[in-house]
Image (cartoon, rainbow, N blue to C red; front, side, top):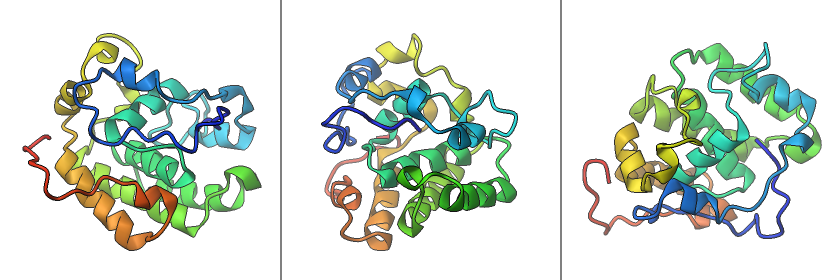
Length: 200
């Protein structure tokens, strides 16, 4: 999870209505990030090249693509959901790995990066969403940062991966109930009046 260094990071939120845009086009609107500033303790558990990497560990550029596909911004609550979804989609996920991430992210990560209780709730929602909808998809192993993925429309990529906007909205509504009033929760797309198809 790279810290965003662009002044507009707080406002960036792709949402779920990016269907007609390519992944590349949506990524072009994302504020810059500097992976070199990520603390070593985070790289230990979240960098896929680390011998201690947890299930779903992923490089930043691929992680950014998942932000686009799941329609989440860059608040810590959003990051927690993305990390949870990536871990939950990993075929080697275990309860022990989930517990390890909760422990290290709340006690060992530096203060600026440390997860609070609400972030853990969002992380667990992400894990649950993936287990329910993307089990064994191993999103962290799919080269979303390369072609042909980058030139796919977001709708095409979601369909290919089995990501349902209807299911995402259901989990976003859970976040609204579990984490009411936060900035990240307030801007989640939970509209129930939309005509969602099976993989819309």
